[in-house]
Length: 400
Image 1 (cartoon, rainbow, N blue to C red):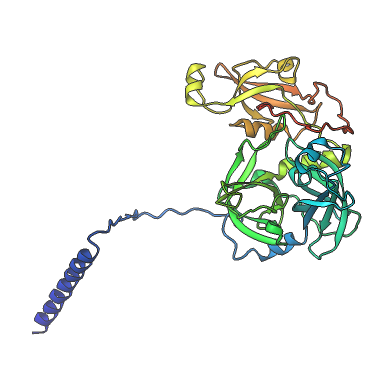
Image 2: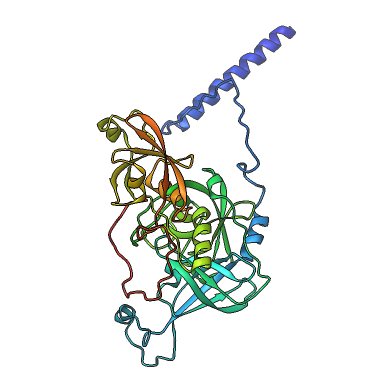
């Protein structure tokens, strides 16, 4: 009797389950259901504390906002000495009243007041004001600019200022959390979070000759006014300077781009020390190696960048590098795109010696190359006092 009762209960349960499936199937007849089958064998992955998502970003945010400043620029429309500026903006009736022409962000690098921002934030300005997070305002002087990387260095007279420590942008991993800190739409001390989406990204936004683009791409929200602000890791270290967004409207729509601190550190150090960037040039014209080119040039390993041209009397040709060589590494660091090669070379100064690893006819070769400056020599380039109104070449050049 007891066995019959148990058997009856089991039948009811099975029928109930079948009925539920039939009802669910009839309700969801129009929906396409995808079933994901998981392997019974579990795989374990070791995640470092750096890669895993932190519980919150408060420490990094609090460290960052104190060292990120609001940059406001002013210019006189008359008597500026800049005919291009006067042409676009006209001449005011009262030349004693400056006109606010722009705003952005900046990052304090030293306790005595050196600040990095974007070149496009302060370009064309006669007066620059820096407002700290505690609302103190200072007049700033422009120490130097570098249109090829869109960076500029400002200086304010103060001491004991909060500043950000340099991190290591080379160690950033795809998917790693980062914070963007700045002043979008004139809103001070704004922090947004996102992940690193890509590295060494070239978006062809800089129009200067020998432009250097090797951006960190993130999905942290960045808007107008964030330019020159900080990109920091979860330890509050500076890993980039926010510079651009991918947008058709001018507002953030998904991706932002930051100049890696590996470039920022070198450029700002040069400007502070020399007043101008000491840009090292390898003297090659390069393209990314793809499968079709590898087949055409009988290259077995599709890694590196293909040399398509050499600068006359440049560093590369003097060292013995040839057209159709494939550069695979600079000082042991692999390079697989023109942006990666340019970023590596940009860390050095003219007259520095680097090791270049080549693939020539499927044989690995190492060469020592002494880098040159932009004028073809190995000496220090002094800061230019006179700057033309137009000041830039708009030819697209991919070289390193």
